[in-house]
Length: 206
Image (spheres, rainbow, N blue to C red):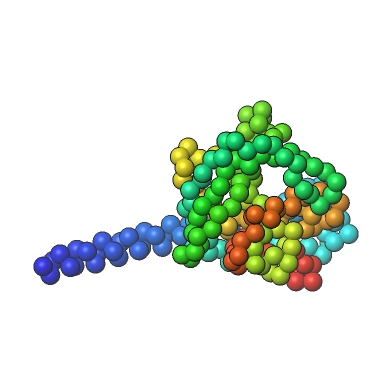
């Protein structure tokens, strides 16, 4: 009996150690991507930032990477949805179609978000399986950009899908008002603080 107890404790220890190692690599990978993005945004030929402010730019602000905001969800496809014109920050009206509902939990609470397909991408082999997830949450206009944030996804092979809020990014409108950006539909407001991903862009913070 004593040996069984030691065995189970060892199994638990190894599982925790393995998870800790995976989390460390996960965090390192995301932090590396953030460094690379800062390099691109510092380049005057590639940056979406207003050129007037680019000289002051020292890097984007992010919430700390938190593995708890990388959640596994269920994608319920809604094949009967019709294409519609999605509102933007300008008079541009891109056409999207709701692809399905994402059902997931964050820290034990259940949520649902709509995910969309850009109709212009359906015939593009490079982007045909892309899904677009725009959302707002209780950090919007406070810690994060008021116009919401985006997450890019791909159509999964099964109903299970990973939603990584640590990868949430600001639309270009956060950096310059010359851009036209999709506004998250009302149904994609989360009644929770998503303390993950990109923060509000304020040069005074740099």
